[in-house]
Amino acid sequence: MGNAPSSPKPGTEFQVIGAGLSRTGTASFSEALRVLLDAPVYHGGTQTLLGPEVEIRSMIKILERFPIRSEEDRKVVFPLLKQRFDGYAAATDAPTSGLVEELMELYPNAKVICTVRNADAWVKSIGGLSTTSTMWFLRVILFPVPSMRYFADFVQVLSKQFVYLYGESVPVSTKTYDRHIEWLKRVVPEDKLIFFDVTEGWEPLCKALGKPVPKDIPFPRINDSKTTERFAKEMIRKGLVRWAFMCGVAGLAIIALLRHL
Image (cartoon, rainbow, N blue to C red; front, top):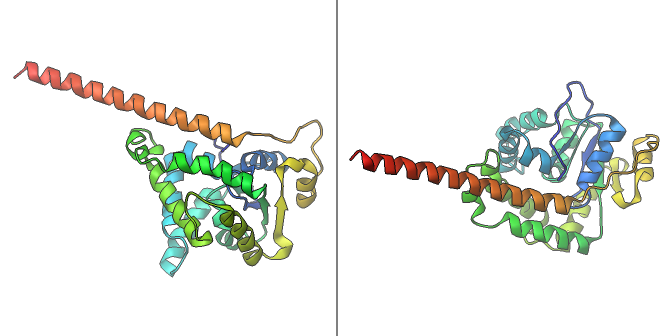
């Protein structure tokens, strides 16, 4: 995930659907797009977990209707997608990576760029995130924390998206990674699909977008793994502190009540 959520800029043209799975350099990719397109970029993990509560609640509603099976589903999903992504030049990370077909319909002129990495390294990286995400007590601990109280629900519907698209939930294997690439090649027109490894830096990305290589600006290198780990620890700490405060207040209230009995 990135460092901070971004805000939409009205009138911004949506140009890139980031189709890379989480932990494929999506945070670095998002920042690179922000520089090249000179406009805000919607990084799913950051916006959902650090943005206003409406972000995560909207994504849960969208994924509850995934895949779209009826006109009623469409009437719910597409307005929510527009609400979340209008005003951004691009969207990356989960759940965007699994909503490529819907976003191509909504933004037909956008390119689809999938960030890639070694499949075995991806499984190792995403595995640690999956273990943390599915700890049963998170729902209780995070309840006092705005937005994060919905985290367990978000992980649950995101897992259902994975099962539908790749036949696997957490923990995932290289099958999920390989099936994601196969799925993209099947649903995205060949002339719109681009694969990009963030370790290659500016040149291939600039070529794909028809942009000059930025002068004196190094390609962003954001360690998504360490950022996510720090964030998880901070949210758990915040939840525990708020529970302690609430329990303390409740305890004082009970003592005061007993004194009046």
